[in-house]
Amino acid sequence: MTTDVLPEQLGCKLTIENQVDSSTIASIVGDVLAHLPEQADTETRVLALYHWVREILFVYPSCPDDLCEHFNNALRLINWWGCGLCGTQSKVFGLLVAHALGREHVRLVGTHEREVGDWKMRQRGYLAFKWSGLAKDNDPDTPDGHSTLEIFWDGAWHLLDVMVGFYRRRQDGTIASLQDLLDDPALAAQPVGDPEGDMPFGDEREIFTSTSISYSSVTFNNWPGEGLPLTLRPGESFTWLAKPVEGAYYLHEKIRERFGSQTLAPGPQGHRPDRSPRRYGSGRHRWVTTLEPTKDDPFWCAETGDWHLRVELPYPILAIEWCMEKGATGLLLPHAEQDARLLPIQAVGKLSTSPDRPPSRAYRIILRSPGRQLATGPRPLVVELTSIVQLNPQVVPHLQRGSNRIRLHGSPGQDLQARFRYRVDDAWHEAGCQGVGAHELVVDGEAESQQLTLSNGEPS
Image (tube, rainbow, N blue to C red):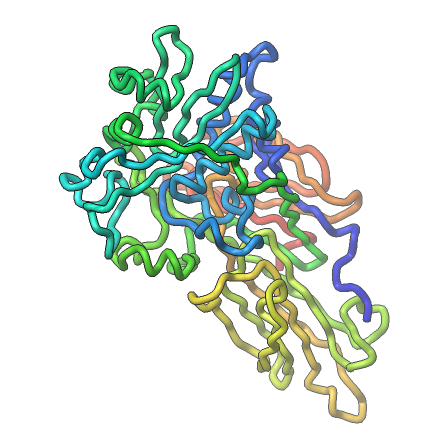
């Protein structure tokens, strides 16, 4: 059987100058730090990474740390979920800093109430955190814990809590460690003049001044992670939608068990009083192709007399739709990364990911022509596949006011095209560019409700 992925069609993406390319850990760190002066000191570099994570991740339950390795990846938390609690956010931040400074410069800090009541849990009702949302079956008299991060430079450790949005400075102006705050709790009462470091969720100083501590290494993501390439064969397109598909998001069953329905029902959203709600995002992959029953068709399998197609995306697939002519049939392998269970399908249908199992990034589909049983043999088959995915809209490339220098990445000669649809004031606009390489698009005004489509060939 021939391959269904052609090497010259791998690795498509779009980047915009002065925006962070989130496809690899190296590109994230490089792009964030590229805006700094060459002589920037270590504190400035670390704070740049800190502020970037504060901007692109919001507080909401993501997948648990102990999920299988398929999900235990900082790139996927950044690009897929866009949210997390203290442990996952600290580990993502720690991985970026470890890439910039070295792993030995980063350590996780576990905090616990020194005594019951130290964190004022009785007054607050739910654990210690004002922003936590609603949970069930949590005894407010039970000491709870928190995870944060310390980074080593200039001969000392420095506490930066990326989820709470907290850091403080010693009398000499350097950023304090957690031990410094325990030794001198008055430091925690001194704001640093940084909205992202002065607890935007509310005053939670006691978490850092009435606690016992433990240290561990950042074991989350011992490797920096591979890139998340988008494969676009002729006839394929991917659209980062302007608005999420209602209900098209995934929460692990452990999170569903722990948190109440009132918190989970609206879908992931932030709890920052100083910002509009952060939401999950969705994307739509579309592939329209005509399959030929010949050896020249890369998907044709002469031994079985059918076509074998594979869709693999850099995001978790939450729904699959297919449409063929009447009489066509096939088999669907919806979780190609995880198991080998085949489902029989008819010419038209849809399958959504069950909430009790993690979504996959890839699926396979075996298609049979309605003429397969006729004496003339199978005839060409037109098929349309549509996939809905979950993603983090905070890291999607977007047009800004003025000149936007865009680069389309792909193979030379590939018919790669980008189409933007956006609103300025009350008027809708469309703009685009074609061909691998550099382009420029100019926007008059603030572009809102942006939708980006990347395609290989004209979108049908």
